[in-house]
Structure formats: C-alpha cells, structure tokens
Image (cartoon, rainbow, N blue to C red; front, side, top):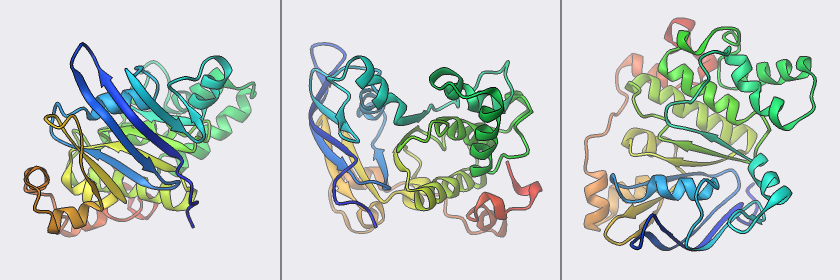
Length: 274
C-alpha cells in the first residue's frame, strides 16, 4: 500500500530561459511507487520541467521537494544526497561506448561509493538482471539493440538504489514490440520494487499502458491543463486540448508477436528480446 505522503511535491514552479516564462505556477504531487507521466505536444515545457526536477536548471521561483528535500534550495552535501536518491535515464541512453555494459551500470557506484570492484560487479549484474540483460554485461553498447540500450540505461539509473527514477522519452525511436517490452520492465520495477517513476513521453500506447496518472502541459497556458488517469481522460474528456493530444492513432498490440511484447522480459524467448 502506498504511503499517504507524496514522495515528490512541486509548488508554484515558474521556469524560464529568458524574460518570458515557459512554465508558470506549476504545482503537483507524486505518490510513492506511482508511474507518473508528463505529457503534451512539442514545446509545451515537458523537458524543461524534467531538467528542473533533476537539478540541471534552477527555476525563477517555486519549490521541488524530492523525498523530503527541496532540490531548488539545497547546497553541498544536502544536494548530493538528493541526487544520490534519484536516477535518470536520458532519451538516447547515454551509455559510454568505450566501456562494457556492466561497467556503464557500475559507474555511479565507482563515483559515489567506496565499494570494491568485486562488489560493484555483483551489483551491476543484479541491476542488469532486473531489466532482462543479465547475459549482456560484458558486451559493448554498440552491440546492443535500441531497446537493450534503453534497458541498460535504466539499470545504470538504478545503481545507487534510488527511490525515484526519471525517464526522458524512453520509447522514442523504438518499434511497437520493443516499446511494449520496455513498458513491461517499467511496470515490473514499479510494482515489485516500489520505485517511483516520473516519465516524459508523447507515445500514446506507452502512456495508456504504464501511467497511473498523467499531467498534460500546454504551451499557451504555460502549465497544467489536465490531470488524471490517462485512460479515463482518453475516453471521457471533452477538453479540446486533451482531445487534440489523445485523438491520435495509438499502437494497440493485436498480433501474436505484439501480445508477446506485453509479457515480462524474463518470460520472452531469447529470439524475441530486443
């Protein structure tokens, strides 16, 4: 059962790159263990919001409290503690091509802990097994498919056992089968490990499959114009801004191959894994 207190609290957040705000007075909460997805058309501020939540940018005003600490005002050791408590998967995966997959996953442990190499190798194997890549630790990133790179990046984001994972467009560039398989990994991690996910996405099938709740950003409103269960919003909302976003053709798995993709990674035959 989820705790009653939110693990993320955003209040009165105003963000800008110049004199004109991109987001203004944004406020929302995220519950522990929730898969929370930020949606909206291009230019609405999704990536801007994500960059502020992970501490890459500072807002004009407002607070972003992550697991009890405000990353906006935190400095020194307090800020480092906050950053250790979150993991980030960037859109392209951002793996280092000169290192094995296992070494990529172990990098946060090398940077932020005093664990010996043997322990780091064990942790890397465990994290890779959670995303179905336990047999690929010693290969180079160039040998992986796009879906496998994304899963390896999630494994690296989990290296320090963060309570919160931020994913930037995880399904971007993936075919429907691979995207559905990645969705299955996310749901499994949220349900089995209680990890909280904050995901930026525009992929309808993925949003409808994994999100417990979404917020819809709008560039004209410079903030949130709708919030709730995406399946209910898709089915019942009469707001034209919501309809514009959801009234697009969604990839609905229907073929036997696509149905296989909805299974957990560990349940798939080796030849079906990306």
